[in-house]
View (cartoon, rainbow, N blue to C red):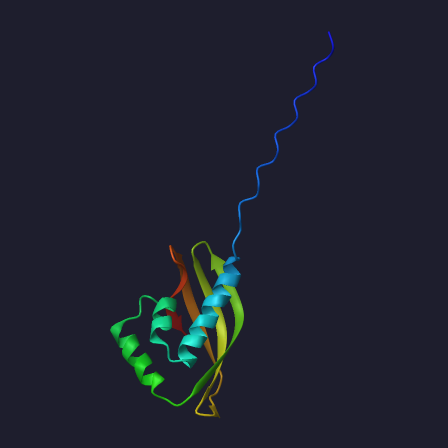
Length: 123
């Protein structure tokens, strides 16, 4: 009786499709945050920070009344822990052609069903 051939090992399962990394998604969100401010786009800002309070919205509307605004953001650190993250950044705004002193901000983020969003903005 001829020897039986050993069964071939099963083919490895295909790797799950991977989307953008957390850091890439967070960097895109931070870009949208800066764009919302520069373009005075309240709808985009609400998408970035869906828990926008009435007081925050009023302050934002007042800030949007300034002249043309450019927003340059440099991300200095991204720390992801599960479904939360903290982004440290430096904003260098130019309002009406006048450069404003750069300032640091910390964005606290949360990952939800729609992806990453800003929970709070601090300094």
